[in-house]
Image: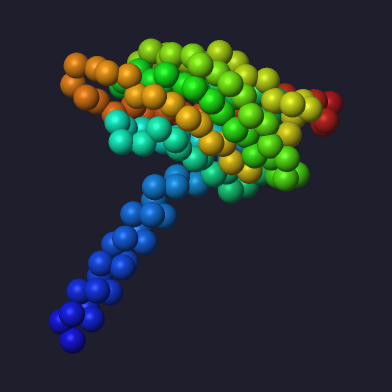
Length: 144
């Protein structure tokens, strides 16, 4: 009985860690302008992260904000709700408390499903993890 309980607890703990690592985001705001559409804490162990977007919203551009520690943003792959993807080579270091350049999305405002980004965590004095936020530009051009 003890072994069954222990295995069950380990499975639940493992599933909880897997689910929370994906950081699905919900965007409910329909106002024009920049809106936070996702976030992730990146570390020195991985070099690829996924931000899932649960409720689709149309965005014309995205940008990344980095907090606490710098990263070198290498590549982005944007997955659209329509099923197509857009790969973007960035190769742009982003300082802590800084932003990437604005990245225009193909086809104007598009519904996003997820964003995969490849990065390299840059050395810092305290081995601090970076907090990365993804912002989307909503223009509502189709409603004007």
